[in-house]
Image (cartoon, rainbow, N blue to C red; front, side, top):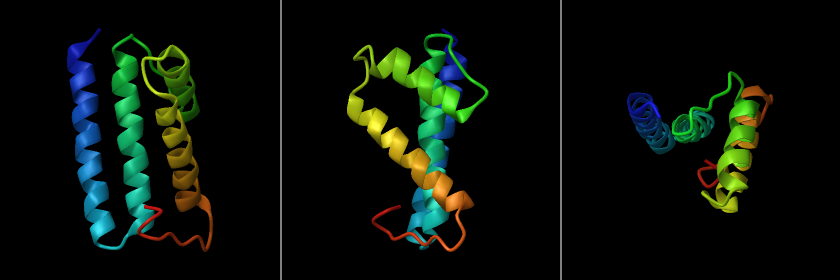
Length: 106
C-alpha cells in the first residue's frame, strides 16, 4: 500500500467536501452536487489505493470499489447505493439542460 497516495486522496476528498459545503450554503446546488460526488470519488480512490487498485474511468473506480470492498463486506451495501445516487445526480447536474436541484437533493 502506498500510504502517501492514500493520504493525498483522502485530503483531496476533505478539501472537495469543504468546497461542496460552501457551494451548498451559497445556494449553488448543482455545483455542490458536483463537489460532493467528487468527494466520494476521491475517497473511493483512496480506499482502492489501499489494495493497489485504480481505474482511469469513473465507472471503473465504482466497479472496483463495489467488487473489492462492498461485495466482500468490507464496506456496507448502503455505501454502494450512495455512490450510485451521487453518480446519477452529478451526471444530471453536469449534463442535463434545465435541470434544477433543491437544497435537499444537494
